[in-house]
Image 1 (tube, protein in one colour):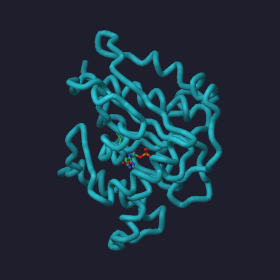
Image 2: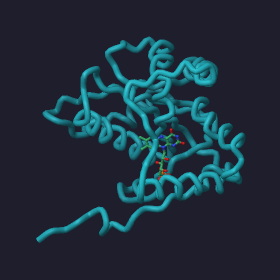
Image 3: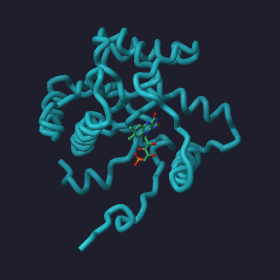
Image 4: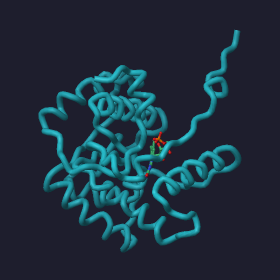
Length: 220
Ligand SMILES: Cc1cc2nc3c(=O)[nH]c(=O)nc-3n(C[C@H](O)[C@H](O)[C@H](O)COP(=O)(O)O)c2cc1C
């Protein structure tokens, strides 16, 4: 097991996985501490649905078809347009990924192919989906984020890599229907996870971070 600091420093979004699955009982045991994540008034407003085996294979077939056919359904609005420093960081992260994958920025077809791999979970053996109850807003989304980061760090501490994916939120209805999830659960994003394929260029992608003094402002 890695220390918390190691897990935070070493976690990176993984975009190529080995097919080796993790046993269901092992997953339940590994993820149980994430339930200790804090939430407003201890409401614990999260649902985490994990698809493996036949369930993930059904989704792997259906999601690219639904997206390509324009059967897009979002529970929360998505813009994806940023200005100023946020746009600079968005472009820097995209450049880091494309150069790790050997894709030219001008090569639209290769970029589209890379994007479509979101819907086949980068070949991961597991995909999870993070939901909050219908009618809940920003505060509960923050609770969900804390739960999700706890999940990612627990996975990382056990050598299991992951990729959070807003792209999977574009197909909320398809995912709910395929996994028989009630309409009252609203999808924020997905998480592909498994053991990394260390030979894939996509997994060499390193993103920058601002200096801690820019984000952590001490007042006295
Ligand atoms: C909520 C959330 C949604 C994301 N959605 C996607 C996605 O749809 N596809 C993808 O490849 N990466 C996605 N990412 C990964 C980010 O691009 C990545 O976290 C960021 O560039 C920093 O890189 P790192 O995770 O390797 O540190 C998402 C990350 C978060 C936190």
